[in-house]
Structure formats: C-alpha cells, structure tokens
Image (cartoon, rainbow, N blue to C red; front, side):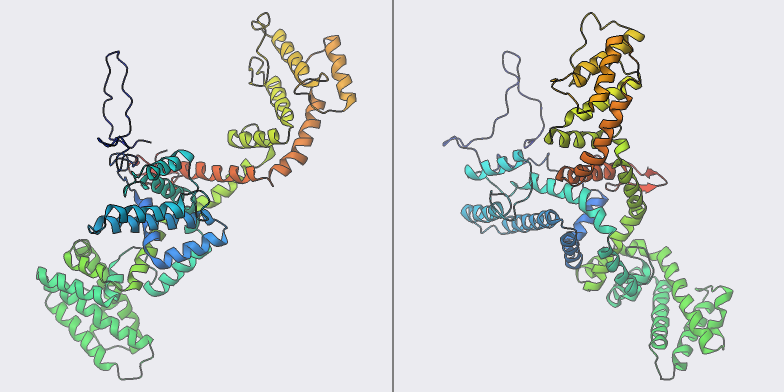
Length: 529
C-alpha cells in the first residue's frame, strides 16, 4: 500500500530484486509498531484550494451542521460517516501526539476505539472502504503494531470521496444558499473573503488595524480609519432612526474632512464636495455612504495586504468573534464556488446526464454500456445487447471486428475481403443468434426467423438483412429492460460514476479556476486525474 519511502530495491545475487517485507521486532519477530502505517513520503499532503475549502467545512461548526443536515436530506449518510471518521481521527491523533504522558497501552486503547467504531466488521458506523485498506488496518491491530498513523490511508480515501462527490453538490444546494444569504445580510454585497470593509465593520479588527498603522507611523492612514469610524457611526445612527440632534456629528465630520483637505492628505471627487459645505441632511447622508466606500478603497490599495500578514491581524484572528469567522468561511466557499462556476457546471452536468441516460447512447457511451450490459447479464438476456452490437458492426462496415462473445474467425475466412467479408459477417451473426439452441439465441418472431433462414439458404446476404430482427430486439430493450434498468441499484452506481467522471473533467476540484471552458493556473498533481 505504499507504506515505505520510495527507494531503489536491493538486488539479490541472481539479479532479482528482494521483496520489501514488513519491519519486525528483533527479539520476538513480530511486526514492529508502525510497520503497517503509511510512510511520511506516501502520505505527504499536497493540499490544493479545494482541500482548503473542505477543511473549512470540518472546522466551522455552523457549516458542518448545515452539511450534515443537507447530507441527511439527500440520504447521503456515507458523507456524514466520512466526516465523523476524519474528525475523530484528527482529534485522536492530536491527543496522542500532544500528551506525552499517555502510555503505550493508553494509545492502543484510544486507537482501538476508532477502529471499533469505524473499521471493525459489524459496526453501525463502519466506513465504506476497499478490502485491502481495511485488512491492512485489521492486521496492524491483530499484531499490536498500530500507531497514530495507522488510519492515514483510510483518512485520505474518505477525504477524496468527500472532495469529489459531496462538496460540489453541497455548495450549490439550497442549504448553503441560506448560509450565503445570512452572510450578505451581515457583511453587505462584498464577494471577497476578507476585504477592508469587513475589517472596518468589525470593531476588534478595526482596533487591530489602527495598532498596525500606528506601529508603522502612518498618520495619514490612521486619519482615514478614524474618519471612516466617525462617518460609519453617523450613518448607523441615521439608519437606526436616531431622534437626537445629529448636527454635532455632521460638524465633526466636516471639520475632519476640511483638515485633511487642507493638509493635502485627502482629494475628494466633485460628487463629495458637499461633505465640507453646508447642505441638506438627506443629501449629506447619501454622500456619507459614498465616502465610506471611497475610504475603504484607499485603505484596500495601500494597507490591506500588509495588514493581513501582520502580527496584529494574526492576534485578532485567534480571538475573532464567531460571526466574523463564520462569514469568512462562507465567503471563502462562495468564492471557490464562483471560481469553479459550479452553478453553470451543474446545468451542464444535468444536460450531459440526461443525454447519457438516453437509450440511443447505449452503444456509444462506454460507461452506460458497461453498466447496462452488466444488468442484462443479471437478467439472463445479455444476448440481445450482443446481437444489436453485431448488427451495428455489420451496418458500419466493421466486418473484421471480433468481440469477446463471438468465435474467432476461421483460418480459411480471415483473409476474406469486400463482399466475401460482409457475407461472412452475415453468416456469423446467423449462426450465433438465429439458429435454434445456440448459446446466444435471441427471441424473435417465427416469421422473421423463417425469412432469415430463406435468405441464408438462397445466399441473399446483405447489410440490411437483419433490420426486422433488430427492430424487434431494440423495441424490447428500450421499452422493457432499459426502463427496469433505471430502477435498479446498478443505475444509481452508474450515475455516481458519471458524476465523478464529470467532476474530474470539469475542474470541480483542484487548484485550477474555470475560465471560459479552460483552466487558468498551473494544474496540481493530485487533481489532474
């Protein structure tokens, strides 16, 4: 399972490479602790932007709860199980690594709880995982060789399923749209993750910004922040229906504006000149709102990038109010959704899925063909599909194509060309599907069978001789077996596989931004599948 660091295999005397065996204890000969875990090289995380967004869903309780509710409504219980497994593994691993007081026995017990809940057979919360990974984990516990990294491989597989299958669907759901609506109500229409307006609106963030500017001794930007705060307080008072006299607030704002203009630190556009002259209250209120945006734009250009990298912002983010963290998370996910054009991609997906599910594509679409043929095999009527394929080859001049269910071409016929090649194909179809008692005999009316027998006897062979039989078989497949296939569990498997294939092809995940049908940026290794 790739649990060792890649290196050149040692060579024995006969020139054959040695088999890399599980590391064992010197005295007992039993597997050593950690020998079943994935190595650091194998599990080195190459997290891309989509991985970062998925981590945001794990970390923010409100978004996590919304995701679980959505998964329950969508009957996607596996998604909730995967999420719980990942959160449990993270918590257990953190506890083991940070608490040196734990004995080896305590560590094994903690890991065993995770194993019993999510991996052991018969567990109600057992994750769906391939047998190789499950058996490897089980062997580690059977041999008392499990360490804190034993679940890493299962963790990564669950992570990938969530990233490919569930995260894009959640981001375009009504549940997430409601979260976005709540954020817009609190933060306005800004589509940026952390923009200057959001920082200024948050009192603690604004204080951290002032501290950063004063450390830099940037008096002009400090004045801008102070002016923004004054104007914001005034606008808030007006919109809140304040009954007091607002003339003093207006006087202070006008005085601040005049001082900045006089010092040559503020150059207002003509539309805002009313701010430092006598004017009606309504006109002043509207212009004050424009001034908020004007100042925020100046601060964004001159200050924002440096502030977001500063120790002041780092301290603020550690103690930021829950609403600020929640809004930041939702805006991050919204930006990711917009960059990937997930809403437009959903429409494309539904159109492609509808086309793929059409019976006319059953021979062209390899994925649909594979699942439908498997269903026909379960229903013991696979010969109908074989017959349609062979007649299709006959009509499209695919005479030399020999499929797995047909006998190989006889030696004396394999070099046939032209009409002889076509006639051999006609006879081969007749021998395999029409003659009574054949393994792949198809069920067609006796009248059509007699007509075909007469044509074969008289040598009247042509590419359209099986038209009547083909119409009968296609009518049965389209209006009987294909309709039943759509109600079978294999059809659900087909839709899931189609979704994964579509997601990978349309850059729903990864480090790339979808732009006019192409990607911008350099593709990342893991997601360029």
